[in-house]
Image (cartoon, rainbow, N blue to C red; front, side, top):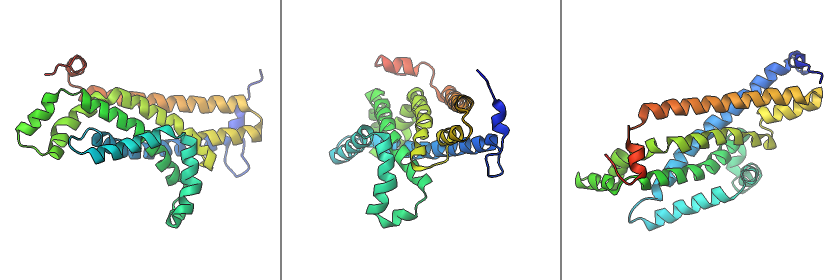
Length: 240
């Protein structure tokens, strides 16, 4: 096979090299994934918490509907809805950049999965945690803020790591609405250069580096906030 890595040093016709174009696309990929992650964590944390509230059946139902809707509709369909349908239904959304529309679509899609992780984390805690908060006179909101959520979020970091890596990989569908991220770069560069092997291998390496970086960052966070022995005890119904 004839390898030609010099293709990345060629001019793409606009005064840039394909290498510069690829790194620009990588930046867009990381920007989409990073902003979507913030949206997913905020919405997912809220909905996951609402699903575990005692004596609030309507809030629980609302959160359940959110999870079922965003989890069961394909991501590409949700992106098309945000890009084509929402601006038609709400004219003020026509002024919103397509980048933000993709961020909302990807963030809300991932929030449904994160909400499940948060719910599982809260329900994995011994009931004594909630009773301890009540015994101290905390309100429900205070119990969640100071007792339940700090513990639950620590024990769900491993599955959150997987969701964060999946979100990064799912950002590739942004090419469908012309966001200039890595997948779109690969498709266009392959068409212009006819060097699909080199282009897709380079893009694959960048995706792998990004996912590995996310994995290492989350592993560092997990190590810093873990409670020694608690996860094992929690899995057997005990606690310290």
